[in-house]
Length: 420
Image 1 (cartoon, one colour):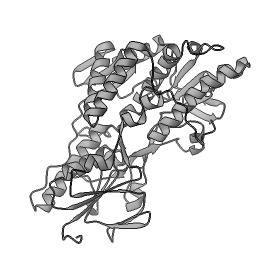
Image 2 (cartoon, helix red, strand yellow; image 1 turned 90 degrees about the vertical axis):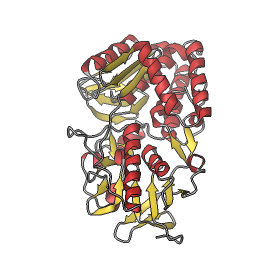
Image 3 (cartoon, one colour; image 1 turned 135 degrees about the vertical axis):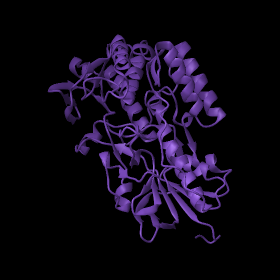
Image 4 (cartoon, rainbow, N blue to C red; image 1 turned 30 degrees about the horizontal axis):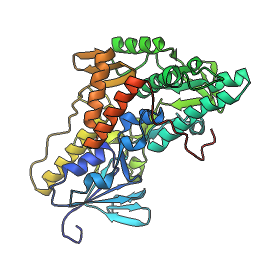
């Protein structure tokens, strides 16, 4: 108990799961502390649009303090968790110690290079605003450097963009880069033709969008090929360096390589000594608590949770938000000494991915949408889930302007320690 005599709840992570849990505890008779190493909540589904100069970081990120400022029982801290003493019930973060009665770990995932972490220098992933800015800088610099060189081989390498991973992120990145090269930058240079750029998607599996039905996967493949994107399917990456990648035995010289192939859970499971499943995710009980520690809950991408068919839950925002709200309900019931809610059950509302201008795929139960109708549905859904009326209006108007003019307004190359 805290000084107020009320239970202490600590939430680690201000992503979709942690934020949903905090908001669902608004009326709880408890003192809540939410701690995150960033001061903002990022709408990750649109990070690729920051990386491809369609949106600015502020369009898809909001200060966590602002989001929760009207919730009097929540304190927000900027800090990084170093360790957790599960027996003493203390979270150690930077220079402070946070005692807790209930702990919610919602720390998400990071990039996985399948045992080759050295590849991260050459192939950045896309999980944070900093990642998006790094990719945007590399992408735009590639065209600028190609304009400067007279070496045809080097120019070809600079104008080759390889995306490792054929899931939604890889498909969306490929489509967006193709639009930049074929439309946005088509008339901006004098010594190169950006339309000659090669965009290559490399996928270890036999098809794109493996979580979607086969017909939608085939549609995505045809749409990308129509945009001039090259596909390398059943081609696992075996080497990645400053010059490019080796995939399926083929050497691909590329100045810009983007990693969208795999994820690994944060060290949350190691902090509490929990058993782990796939990708290092913490195994949890049906109420999302950690076996042996009913006061600790793990939610979102760092939790190993299966659906009713025994399949891992998708690493998407709706799953994390549902888990956050559920855990909040469990804690509220305990605080009120009321019956516990039934075991957590995930409701999957559908999968969405955009491929490019006027082209997207949507799968919601029996409903399948593709092409322009799918693109409209995708856009409306993403605008709806943005936080704040201002951001919804800004993103909607930015997309409309880009649609009508074929231009992107966030084409800034900012100074960075990144030497790519």
